[in-house]
Image (cartoon, rainbow, N blue to C red; front, side, top):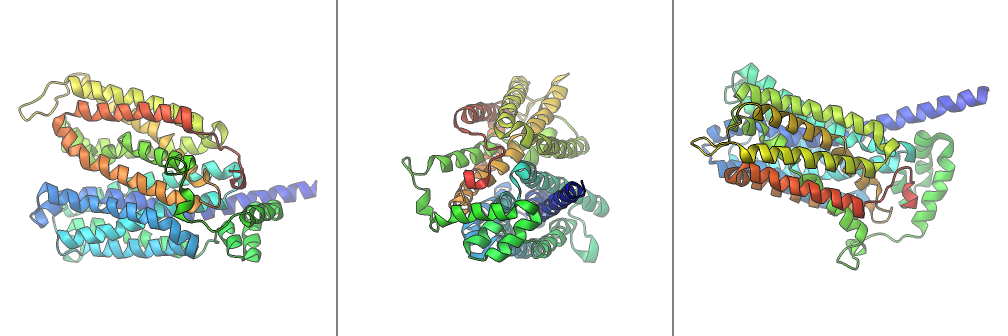
Length: 467
């Protein structure tokens, strides 16, 4: 009886350790969300401070997305060469440098360059965290721990919006001087720095991926890490990792080539990444305040709606964490796609059938505004409990050991390119009509449903060595 209790305590200790380790790795996801959202509060002030056009501001803001595509592409290669932990430290340094440069920028050109640097860090963090968590987590916890990446992202978005609001309220406006005479918008951008530093410090305190250590012939260290996260199963897992790595050669991007240009599994990863963005989720987070004002809500009400939406996203991510290892990845994606299809379709109909004012903007009369508001938040709910976290879980675990880092790099880059396309085209689509914009996102939701049904295989409970 004593041995059983001792084993249970040891297992509980292992679980708590692996949760803590995974949480530190997911800090990269927090910075990912924070970096992409914190610019929102500064956009209006930037136009005034630098006397810039909407086009110039748009290019400056979106430069971070292009940097993210580069970072995601090189992140996997660096992870295989330097190790997962060192790459996290590199990302932390880039986050810190980009944040300082952006907050102290002299003009739009250097602000764009610093945003590009920060974007590279975001891209690296977007691929290194899911890969590391998948490699460190026991199979029965991998889905829930992998979902920490999405939880960290949405929490980062919420924290950035809250910081923007607090700083703007304290200064009276984003354009007004704040601490040390610096404009409030600069402090918004600088507010990311403490977390960027904490990410690097935290990364130095967690163990390297055991799979990377075995690949580099550091088996004693790998076994120590495995005992920390698995307990008694460490020796058996060590044998499995050694067996799979012994049959594999070092990977190159040419190893991703297949019959249709790339291996089918790589196309599936790219498809997951692209559909996660093509359903239009970032329109809600990048343009929500402007969007709600455009259809008749006040600036104050629009800000409240944006905060409610970000909280909704956080709450629904907890639902995914609680269910992804119980129900599986594929069922959650199917449920999410169906929900997004219905809610986006509702928004497309409401906006498409609304009368227009003198400027051509839709006017939501009567119950239409309430319906659009409920549909938008239900859409975020459906995304947050499915495509948001589950895609990161699948990308971290669906590739075999040999190609994981390279395939993740390619899929991650595709995600950022898709993000850039959606973000860059929405202003033009909004001019054409919000009904058309949401109609296209509805079509993407339908396509995502068909993609999951025909191309996604369940990975729940499988060991990485069996992929």
